[in-house]
Amino acid sequence: MNVALLGFGNVGRAVARLVLDRHADRLTLTHIFNRGVARKRVPWVPPEVVWTEDIDEVLAAGVDVVVELVGGVSAACYVRRALDAGASVVTANKQVVAHHGAELVALARARGVELRFEASVAGGVPVLRAIEEGLAADRLVRVAGVVNGTSTHILSRMEDGESLAGALAEAQALGFAEADPHDDLSGRDAAAKLAILSATALNRPVCCADISCRSIDGIEPIDFGYARELGCTIRQVAWADLVDGADDVVAAVRPALVSRHSPLARVTGNQNVVTVVGERGGETAFVGRGAGGDATAVAVVSDLLAIAHASAVSGSPSGFSRPRSRVSADYTAPHYIRFTVDDRPGILAAVAAAFARQAIGINAVLQHPGQPKSRLPFVMTLEPCDERRLDAALAEIGTLDFHVQPPTVLPMFEDARGIA
Image 1: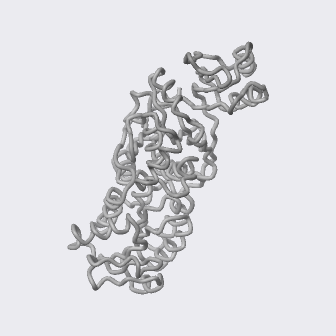
Image 2 (image 1 turned 45 degrees about the vertical axis):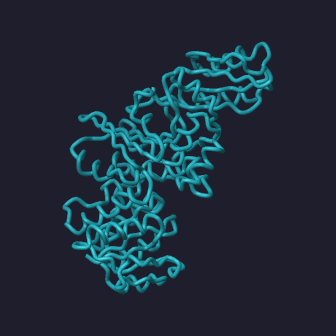
Image 3 (image 1 turned 90 degrees about the vertical axis):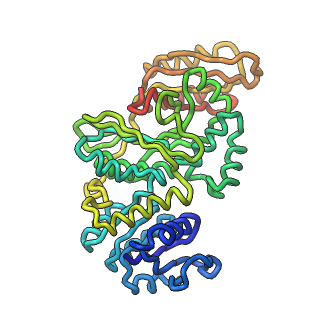
């Protein structure tokens, strides 16, 4: 099977190595496409492989499969053109699949070719194929995961006492974080992966722009101290739930307190975890390396081999053929809130009164001794409440004049099976 490679960065090089070293009997690398291709050439690629900056040259060669590793949503044009030309496509590009998955899956089926994207979620963890093939008999009602390795690395280091800025700089030096880490910190990267998981696991495609996200940038090392007292840690969690009796999906990406008994709490570094809950099978967890050239290359080449073996199960989940579902962030959960205040009498009473007006119960109040009165942190944990009422209470509390900085607000997961 003749294979063309679009993009020769870390993942592209790892894919080429794996194809040439391990699978040359079934896969033939014919073309490598990259901008500024002259600077990408390496001596270990066989001389018969064509290096090019011309996508038309690749498509005119009639290759069987195009591997898209260019990255970014604009690479959808390469995927579209390859499918139109009658080539199957394997991609690791979460943005392309999240934003254009339905259109591209339909095009692949119309042209009688395949579109596979196992590497677009959780890197080397074969979660999409496991859900599509291994759990096909069940009805899945929830999917949740820690699927951004950059945020996991940062939060793991902050748990050890490092500042967010220091942990981010370290992640960038190690190659876990981009020069512009906004999508990782804000949750937008995880939202794109959650959109793919929703279509695959829940049979509900959603617009990733509709998924509500909150950044991890308000978290400080002190929050991990309070989290430990509560038997938790902090992770960036993406989750989606079916709504009973409707096509709607409740979905969000939030930094959250997670029970240490949950699989969501056990990942560190660049690991990813995805959990699904089925009506019959209960909870299943998938854990492994979520980033890195070698791990992602394994998923990409596995997709290539599946196409070469004419696998009976398409790599394009059937959920992408459905109309998009409405997305709501109207979830109910207990919450952790850290206030930092210029201390004076009456603060607790004022905060409690605002929560009471929204019928929100307070579970506990935590405060460490020895903190300066001019910048005093304290934590409230709240009984389960919906985000609408919580936001209304916090808007009222925000008008009070004792705040030194905005409150840090985190939902609390008791386990991977659900909030609250």
